[in-house]
Image (cartoon, rainbow, N blue to C red):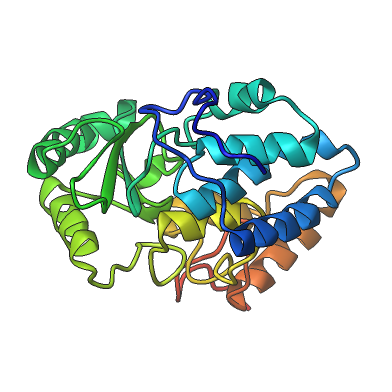
Length: 268
Protein backbone atom coordinates (compact mmCIF):
# COMPACT_ATOMS: atom_id res chain seq x y z
CA UNK A 1 0.00 0.00 0.00
CA UNK A 2 1.39 3.40 -0.89
CA UNK A 3 2.27 6.10 1.60
CA UNK A 4 -0.20 8.83 2.49
CA UNK A 5 1.94 11.88 3.18
CA UNK A 6 0.73 13.68 0.05
CA UNK A 7 -2.90 12.51 0.25
CA UNK A 8 -5.93 14.14 1.91
CA UNK A 9 -6.47 13.38 5.57
CA UNK A 10 -10.07 12.17 4.96
CA UNK A 11 -11.48 14.04 7.92
CA UNK A 12 -8.85 13.24 10.56
CA UNK A 13 -8.58 16.14 13.05
CA UNK A 14 -5.83 17.12 13.36
CA UNK A 15 -4.14 15.65 10.28
CA UNK A 16 -1.30 13.49 11.63
CA UNK A 17 1.45 12.18 9.38
CA UNK A 18 0.54 8.59 8.58
CA UNK A 19 3.28 6.22 7.51
CA UNK A 20 2.42 2.95 5.77
CA UNK A 21 1.74 -0.04 7.99
CA UNK A 22 4.70 -2.26 8.80
CA UNK A 23 4.68 -5.44 6.72
CA UNK A 24 3.73 -7.74 9.61
CA UNK A 25 0.96 -5.41 10.80
CA UNK A 26 -0.41 -5.11 7.27
CA UNK A 27 -0.37 -8.88 6.85
CA UNK A 28 -2.33 -9.29 10.08
CA UNK A 29 -4.85 -6.69 8.99
CA UNK A 30 -5.37 -8.45 5.66
CA UNK A 31 -5.81 -11.80 7.40
CA UNK A 32 -8.37 -10.42 9.87
CA UNK A 33 -10.13 -8.41 7.16
CA UNK A 34 -10.67 -11.48 5.01
CA UNK A 35 -12.24 -13.27 7.99
CA UNK A 36 -14.58 -10.35 8.58
CA UNK A 37 -15.46 -9.95 4.89
CA UNK A 38 -16.29 -13.65 4.71
CA UNK A 39 -19.17 -13.11 7.14
CA UNK A 40 -21.12 -10.96 4.67
CA UNK A 41 -22.77 -11.76 1.33
CA UNK A 42 -21.71 -8.35 -0.02
CA UNK A 43 -18.15 -7.25 0.61
CA UNK A 44 -18.86 -3.60 1.31
CA UNK A 45 -21.14 -4.62 4.18
CA UNK A 46 -17.99 -5.35 6.20
CA UNK A 47 -17.06 -1.65 6.38
CA UNK A 48 -18.28 -0.97 9.92
CA UNK A 49 -16.34 -3.81 11.58
CA UNK A 50 -13.28 -3.07 9.44
CA UNK A 51 -13.25 0.51 10.73
CA UNK A 52 -13.19 -0.91 14.24
CA UNK A 53 -10.40 -3.24 13.14
CA UNK A 54 -8.09 -0.45 11.97
CA UNK A 55 -9.03 1.48 15.09
CA UNK A 56 -7.84 -1.49 17.16
CA UNK A 57 -4.40 -1.08 15.56
CA UNK A 58 -4.03 2.70 15.37
CA UNK A 59 -6.20 3.78 18.29
CA UNK A 60 -8.36 5.82 15.92
CA UNK A 61 -9.46 5.73 12.27
CA UNK A 62 -6.26 6.96 10.69
CA UNK A 63 -5.60 8.08 7.13
CA UNK A 64 -3.86 4.80 6.38
CA UNK A 65 -6.78 2.94 7.98
CA UNK A 66 -9.22 4.71 5.67
CA UNK A 67 -7.11 3.72 2.67
CA UNK A 68 -6.79 0.13 3.85
CA UNK A 69 -10.57 -0.25 4.17
CA UNK A 70 -11.08 1.32 0.75
CA UNK A 71 -8.56 -1.02 -0.83
CA UNK A 72 -9.88 -4.30 0.57
CA UNK A 73 -13.55 -3.39 0.01
CA UNK A 74 -13.17 -1.86 -3.46
CA UNK A 75 -14.50 1.48 -2.24
CA UNK A 76 -13.19 4.99 -2.60
CA UNK A 77 -11.51 6.64 0.36
CA UNK A 78 -14.27 9.26 0.26
CA UNK A 79 -16.93 6.57 0.68
CA UNK A 80 -15.10 5.11 3.67
CA UNK A 81 -14.49 8.53 5.19
CA UNK A 82 -18.17 9.40 4.82
CA UNK A 83 -19.07 6.48 7.07
CA UNK A 84 -16.23 7.03 9.53
CA UNK A 85 -17.20 10.66 10.06
CA UNK A 86 -20.89 9.84 10.56
CA UNK A 87 -20.59 7.63 13.66
CA UNK A 88 -19.11 9.08 16.85
CA UNK A 89 -17.70 5.73 17.96
CA UNK A 90 -15.13 6.04 15.17
CA UNK A 91 -12.45 8.45 16.35
CA UNK A 92 -10.82 10.71 13.80
CA UNK A 93 -7.98 11.72 16.09
CA UNK A 94 -5.89 9.63 18.52
CA UNK A 95 -8.09 8.41 21.37
CA UNK A 96 -7.08 7.80 24.95
CA UNK A 97 -6.49 4.33 26.34
CA UNK A 98 -9.84 4.65 28.09
CA UNK A 99 -12.94 6.46 26.86
CA UNK A 100 -14.89 7.66 29.88
CA UNK A 101 -18.46 8.61 29.00
CA UNK A 102 -20.63 10.55 31.43
CA UNK A 103 -24.34 10.32 30.70
CA UNK A 104 -26.01 13.73 30.83
CA UNK A 105 -29.33 12.75 29.29
CA UNK A 106 -32.50 13.69 31.18
CA UNK A 107 -32.66 11.10 33.95
CA UNK A 108 -28.93 10.87 34.60
CA UNK A 109 -28.70 14.67 34.49
CA UNK A 110 -31.33 15.23 37.18
CA UNK A 111 -29.81 12.43 39.26
CA UNK A 112 -26.42 14.12 39.24
CA UNK A 113 -24.92 13.46 35.82
CA UNK A 114 -24.40 17.14 35.05
CA UNK A 115 -22.51 17.65 38.29
CA UNK A 116 -20.40 14.57 37.62
CA UNK A 117 -19.52 15.95 34.20
CA UNK A 118 -18.62 19.37 35.52
CA UNK A 119 -16.42 18.09 38.34
CA UNK A 120 -14.67 15.35 36.35
CA UNK A 121 -14.04 17.70 33.42
CA UNK A 122 -12.46 20.21 35.80
CA UNK A 123 -10.56 17.45 37.61
CA UNK A 124 -9.00 16.21 34.37
CA UNK A 125 -8.65 19.62 32.77
CA UNK A 126 -10.32 18.50 29.54
CA UNK A 127 -13.68 18.90 27.81
CA UNK A 128 -15.83 16.74 25.55
CA UNK A 129 -13.87 14.45 23.20
CA UNK A 130 -10.57 15.71 24.57
CA UNK A 131 -7.75 13.57 25.92
CA UNK A 132 -5.50 13.98 28.92
CA UNK A 133 -1.85 14.83 28.14
CA UNK A 134 -0.74 11.36 29.27
CA UNK A 135 -2.98 9.76 26.63
CA UNK A 136 -4.93 7.78 29.22
CA UNK A 137 -8.43 9.29 29.30
CA UNK A 138 -10.67 10.63 26.58
CA UNK A 139 -13.72 12.25 28.19
CA UNK A 140 -17.13 12.24 26.53
CA UNK A 141 -20.53 13.66 27.34
CA UNK A 142 -22.93 10.96 26.14
CA UNK A 143 -26.66 11.07 25.55
CA UNK A 144 -27.69 7.71 26.99
CA UNK A 145 -25.89 4.65 28.31
CA UNK A 146 -29.08 2.51 28.18
CA UNK A 147 -28.98 1.97 31.94
CA UNK A 148 -31.46 4.53 33.24
CA UNK A 149 -32.42 2.35 36.21
CA UNK A 150 -28.89 2.84 37.58
CA UNK A 151 -28.65 6.60 37.03
CA UNK A 152 -26.35 8.40 37.06
CA UNK A 153 -24.23 6.09 34.94
CA UNK A 154 -20.66 6.42 33.70
CA UNK A 155 -19.01 4.09 31.20
CA UNK A 156 -15.33 3.28 30.75
CA UNK A 157 -14.75 1.74 27.33
CA UNK A 158 -18.46 0.85 27.34
CA UNK A 159 -18.38 -1.04 30.64
CA UNK A 160 -20.96 0.05 33.21
CA UNK A 161 -20.26 1.99 36.38
CA UNK A 162 -23.65 2.43 38.02
CA UNK A 163 -25.00 4.90 40.59
CA UNK A 164 -22.00 7.15 40.33
CA UNK A 165 -21.12 10.33 42.19
CA UNK A 166 -18.59 13.04 41.36
CA UNK A 167 -16.16 11.57 43.89
CA UNK A 168 -16.52 7.96 42.72
CA UNK A 169 -16.03 9.02 39.09
CA UNK A 170 -12.93 11.06 39.94
CA UNK A 171 -11.58 8.00 41.75
CA UNK A 172 -12.37 5.90 38.67
CA UNK A 173 -10.43 8.13 36.28
CA UNK A 174 -7.53 8.44 38.74
CA UNK A 175 -7.32 4.65 39.05
CA UNK A 176 -7.41 4.20 35.28
CA UNK A 177 -4.64 6.74 34.80
CA UNK A 178 -2.54 5.10 37.50
CA UNK A 179 -2.92 1.63 35.96
CA UNK A 180 -4.78 0.23 38.96
CA UNK A 181 -7.29 -2.60 38.53
CA UNK A 182 -10.81 -1.30 38.00
CA UNK A 183 -13.88 -3.53 38.15
CA UNK A 184 -17.12 -2.49 36.43
CA UNK A 185 -20.41 -2.69 38.32
CA UNK A 186 -21.67 -5.30 35.87
CA UNK A 187 -20.15 -7.42 33.15
CA UNK A 188 -16.46 -8.40 32.93
CA UNK A 189 -14.17 -8.19 35.93
CA UNK A 190 -11.91 -5.61 34.28
CA UNK A 191 -11.91 -2.75 31.82
CA UNK A 192 -10.06 -3.52 28.58
CA UNK A 193 -8.16 -0.88 26.62
CA UNK A 194 -9.76 1.12 23.82
CA UNK A 195 -7.78 -0.85 21.23
CA UNK A 196 -8.83 -4.19 22.76
CA UNK A 197 -12.50 -3.16 22.79
CA UNK A 198 -12.24 -1.97 19.19
CA UNK A 199 -11.07 -5.44 18.18
CA UNK A 200 -14.08 -6.97 19.92
CA UNK A 201 -16.35 -4.55 18.06
CA UNK A 202 -14.69 -5.73 14.85
CA UNK A 203 -16.10 -9.16 15.64
CA UNK A 204 -13.24 -10.95 17.40
CA UNK A 205 -14.38 -12.54 20.65
CA UNK A 206 -12.26 -11.89 23.74
CA UNK A 207 -14.19 -14.41 25.87
CA UNK A 208 -15.57 -11.76 28.24
CA UNK A 209 -19.06 -11.24 26.79
CA UNK A 210 -20.79 -13.61 29.21
CA UNK A 211 -18.65 -12.80 32.22
CA UNK A 212 -20.30 -11.34 35.30
CA UNK A 213 -23.76 -9.94 35.83
CA UNK A 214 -25.51 -8.60 32.75
CA UNK A 215 -28.44 -6.92 34.48
CA UNK A 216 -28.94 -6.02 38.12
CA UNK A 217 -32.04 -6.22 40.35
CA UNK A 218 -33.48 -2.88 39.17
CA UNK A 219 -33.52 -4.07 35.55
CA UNK A 220 -35.03 -7.45 36.44
CA UNK A 221 -37.88 -6.22 38.64
CA UNK A 222 -40.41 -6.18 35.80
CA UNK A 223 -39.40 -9.69 34.77
CA UNK A 224 -39.91 -10.92 38.33
CA UNK A 225 -43.34 -9.32 38.55
CA UNK A 226 -44.40 -10.91 35.26
CA UNK A 227 -43.12 -14.29 36.36
CA UNK A 228 -44.77 -14.12 39.78
CA UNK A 229 -48.13 -13.21 38.21
CA UNK A 230 -47.89 -15.80 35.48
CA UNK A 231 -47.85 -13.25 32.69
CA UNK A 232 -46.59 -14.64 29.42
CA UNK A 233 -46.68 -14.10 25.71
CA UNK A 234 -49.32 -16.06 23.82
CA UNK A 235 -50.35 -19.59 24.73
CA UNK A 236 -46.82 -20.62 25.66
CA UNK A 237 -46.47 -17.99 28.36
CA UNK A 238 -46.19 -20.45 31.24
CA UNK A 239 -43.53 -22.53 29.50
CA UNK A 240 -41.59 -19.38 28.65
CA UNK A 241 -41.77 -18.15 32.23
CA UNK A 242 -40.63 -21.53 33.52
CA UNK A 243 -37.74 -21.65 31.05
CA UNK A 244 -36.66 -18.13 31.98
CA UNK A 245 -36.92 -18.91 35.69
CA UNK A 246 -34.89 -22.10 35.32
CA UNK A 247 -32.19 -20.26 33.39
CA UNK A 248 -32.09 -17.48 35.96
CA UNK A 249 -31.94 -19.95 38.83
CA UNK A 250 -28.99 -21.67 37.16
CA UNK A 251 -27.21 -18.35 36.71
CA UNK A 252 -27.28 -18.54 32.93
CA UNK A 253 -27.71 -15.58 30.61
CA UNK A 254 -31.08 -15.13 28.93
CA UNK A 255 -30.24 -12.36 26.52
CA UNK A 256 -29.25 -9.50 28.82
CA UNK A 257 -31.42 -10.71 31.70
CA UNK A 258 -28.63 -12.04 33.86
CA UNK A 259 -29.50 -11.69 37.54
CA UNK A 260 -27.10 -10.75 40.25
CA UNK A 261 -26.01 -13.65 42.40
CA UNK A 262 -28.86 -14.68 44.67
CA UNK A 263 -31.48 -12.77 42.65
CA UNK A 264 -34.16 -14.24 40.44
CA UNK A 265 -34.27 -17.67 42.06
CA UNK A 266 -37.10 -19.81 40.80
CA UNK A 267 -39.62 -20.83 43.39
CA UNK A 268 -39.99 -24.54 43.57
